[in-house]
Image 1: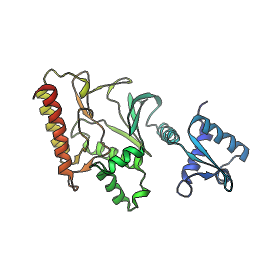
Image 2: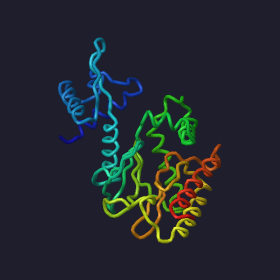
Image 3: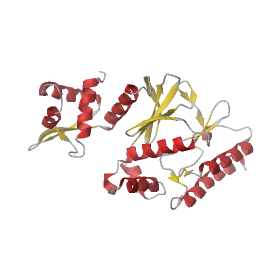
Image 4: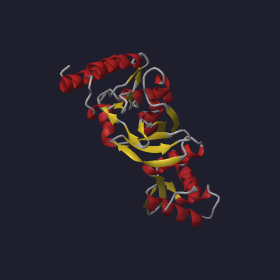
Length: 279
């Protein structure tokens, strides 16, 4: 079963009702669509079977629905295609606690689409760490309450802005577009095979690479402090080129605690090279 434009129309309506309802009543969803209620119910049941929407049935209020996490993925990918950011969708090439990476094709090559996730357990950990600073800054910019923040969307906005600012300053994936909680960016690797991360590479000249990383980080830190910098956030191509990734928790260099975050980032890299290469 493939998602189509009618499914997307329903997901958009439910998404638009989210501020009013956690689960939108089916009658209200149907009243905003151009087709009969019977068709609406059938399409929502299909979305549910595909995992893009979920149901809730209550004795008094009846049946209602909301967009599932993968439903927002579908909306973002659909809009990327509609706006010609990508031409085809590939497969999942990376997963983590806070994101999923999907390969895609563009008119000029390959791209990576990063879908940011909301993980309650990880979110609570974030709130106890420096990484919360980036989310807190977005809350301040938007002038909203803490509980109102859409964490995946805030992370995507931060990363897209950082990649845009650092393009040409240090090697980072070129940002192609942003939609909701997703960032489309340059694919680092060959075709749909991603480059290895630094942690999985044995360097021939570790001292030289270490110097390059420190120099690049210092350049980046004049604008943005990474906040979670390590051997797992540096990609190494077959040609030996370095790319610095995963910036959703980054903060501006002038932001409070940025200096402490920077020092922790630098310590992480120093520790890695000391342990693995005795530098």
